[in-house]
Amino acid sequence: MIVVTGGAGFIGSHIVDRLLEKDEIIVIDNLSSGKTEYINKDAKFYLADLTRDKIDDLLRGAEEVWHIAANPDVRLGLENPEEIYRNNILATYKLLEAMRKVGVSRIIFTSTSTVYGEAEIIPTPEDYPTHPISIYGASKLACEALIESYCHTFDMQAWIYRFANVIGRRSTHGVIYDFIMKLRKDPTKLEILGDGEQNKSYIYIDDCIDAMLHGLKAADEMINIFNIGSEDQVKVKRIAEIVCEEMGLNPEFKFTGGRRGWKGDVPVMLLSVEKLKKLGWKPKYSSEEAVRLAIRDLLNELNHNQ
Ligand code: NAD
Image (cartoon, rainbow, N blue to C red; front, side, top):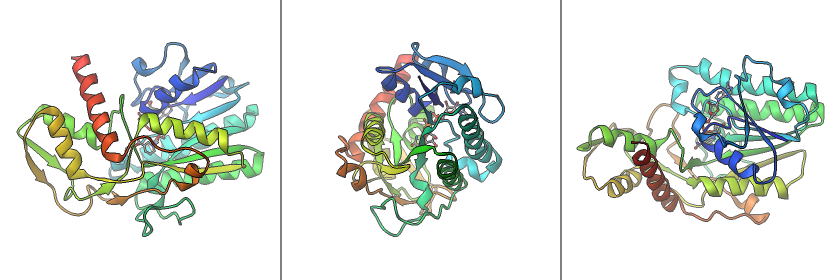
């Protein structure tokens, strides 16, 4: 049996779908951003908040925990750092404590490219110094540190994955989602945060899940840290153009200006994925291909739900 926290969310629900091919799955989620319709019917779902509810009994006997639950909203750190602290750091601490108490020793954790802050080496490898510039990035780095310390102190084992932007069906936040929502409200203009030159890497959800499963199979250190991303970048302005192409629209672009979309935004990001590639994984899609696929996915979902 495997436990997936955040299994009702975008990435978590895809992980559950894949893990169910071989295992019995328990999903723990507070549905703050997750949706019940995303939870695979063959999984057992428990509505619980990691920061408040006792989850020891749900973890008992689990082979491993995929800890995906978090508040993933990088911008939220500007208005509400406490939310990020609670759902990322406190939730991870509480989960680790529950795991330790009931003797579950393997954790798979979803971290982020934002732990590197504004890296000067691009593509950025895993051993690059971590100096986050957002509250979100700092919270995820704190989670990584907690997880590492539990591994050393309580003989646990961890797979820590630092993601580029993950996109695809069921995604409910991020630049593509924002653009589509804005254009559905007003198809004549599109507000673009920053100068549109932000240049980042995007990975399609299926590539991302393949990478996580591959890393888990291929690496067996006490602490296994891998970047996961595509091997190139795409600019925000180009994403806006592709969204417009796919929606058949020709709006006026209105840039808010400045290098960053918001304070704490890292304008240039590309992760080195050589470490995982040496173990035999390779992304199938470039950033631009992933963006187009994700736009089509979201438009299909929205049309379907109308
Ligand atoms: P998401 O918001 O769709 O999923 C997060 C899930 O966690 C939701 O279902 C939510 O209801 C649940 N949750 C939040 N706080 C909880 C709590 N206290 N107790 C129980 N459940 C809680 O986000 P996502 O994009 O699928 O992100 C999944 C993970 O991947 C997160 O850890 C995020 O930080 C990380 N990540 C995502 C990206 C990305 O581009 N989407 C990039 C880097 C890292």
